[in-house]
Image 1 (cartoon, rainbow, N blue to C red):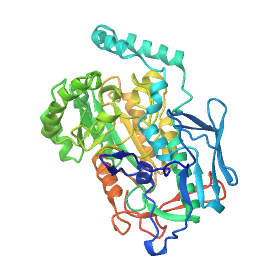
Image 2 (cartoon, rainbow, N blue to C red; image 1 turned 45 degrees about the horizontal axis):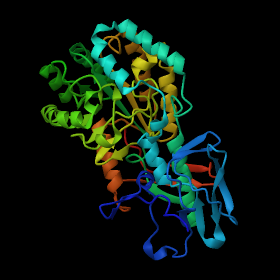
Image 3 (tube, helix red, strand yellow; image 1 turned 60 degrees about the vertical axis):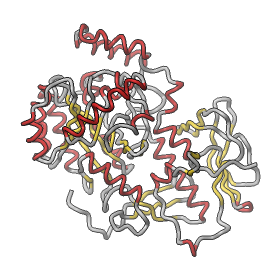
Length: 467
């Protein structure tokens, strides 16, 4: 017996949830009166395993529950290998009007963004060691902390998954899903809700975590630098230092955004459910007092399911790929996504501390290359930096950040909003009907093979708004 429709959501409270991968693609369906009632079905071929595992096709890795049923008589589209060397395939059978998949694309996507694969990862420190570190952190000289993290990086090396600094797994899954949907519909192209407003090819946001009162004072200089190149950014404040109200007023009046960086710079917020619920009212009060709509957890600690309960409209705690944080991981997505009602804006550039302090880079070259790669995927470029001494508060590091701003300012047709504007846009795009004039339509085109899928921005005849 065939399994449920690939991409169908799970059942909760008797209601069918929306397919998270379809929410990302936003394919425009043909009019009801033109739909072919006998169109090819997209479905999982058979019963799936009880537990997820890796499905590998060349350099592409998926984490999902595989269906091991082999379907004969169809045309193989792509083949995956399981850890036990078993091969499973995606295939189309025109005679049966069915596109058979060996996994659920929706499940694979959810496992990426929720970092489900980390349950079997041995990278990073245990909760016990992390707790011990934070208890004794104030007694450990900063140079010793940096030296220890460098030693850990050298010992562990870079992981096979997610690839750093860029992992294209979600982009490949989205193209595979679009290919399957269009092939099943018998079409070579279709409209979809474009990722960004108008004809913008990609989006860029600049975010800063302010670690000290001195960092907040230096934030003004950073804001001056960003305005020089036509940018505004967000500054995430912590509650463990006094925030100068005059500086906050100056930043907000100039169009900058204030966000939250937590109550304490440790992992306490996500250390237990009780701790999370105890701190949430204080976070809500802080958000209301500062007019903050966004949050990033100290040291990017997180529990995926709880992020949707934060008293904000968006979160920035999940990396695209970051093996260097105390909680290493990555969602592999260059696009925003939803955790409940909260929009997650993954940071997609290496952090300034990682790039310049831990890895010892002396230029912005890696930042710029990564930006070009994310723009090529029509994704969200998010820089995570700090205005404090030891970070961009140092002149040499701020000069490298200037080089990044120069490169960003020279990109064409790139949207440069505040983070809260991206979150508002993503919610608008998610709920837009096909005839919503505020959301432009791009075109997805497929070729002969699954790797021949292109996302084209709205018509070249459309007017590109000023950057």
